[in-house]
Image (cartoon, rainbow, N blue to C red; front, side, top):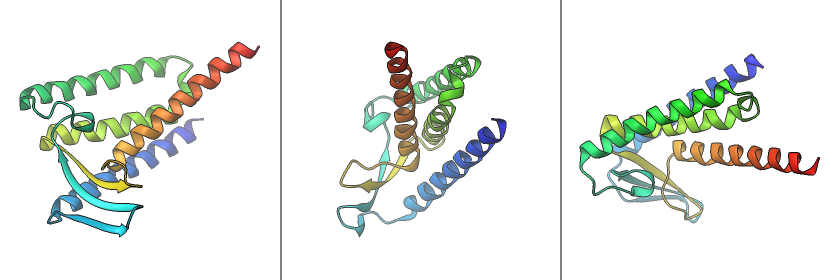
Length: 155
């Protein structure tokens, strides 16, 4: 079990590093939309100064800073709590996706004052790799939550 966790952690560290490389490269672009496969994959660099989906972009910078710090503390607290529970074993990859994805965006928001979103898939809103990690982690978490509750109801 420990080897799988290490492998997952290394994979997620590589994905987070790749996300930061892409964010840095995207900030070097001169703006505009780059259509690699129109309707499928487009590059559109946005500086999200708010939180999720730009919520709170009108707030003062120190308020956003405090909210991002609080988010990081809350995220680590929740993950530490679930780590101590046996339920962590079934959901560890989903929680690690949430930790690395949410942590990457929160740290970038603290360091730069904004989160760089750069890729649009299937004409959906512009996101980054960390956002996709959060969505996948949430999906794994919810899948296992409902699978467990469904299994306990059917017995």
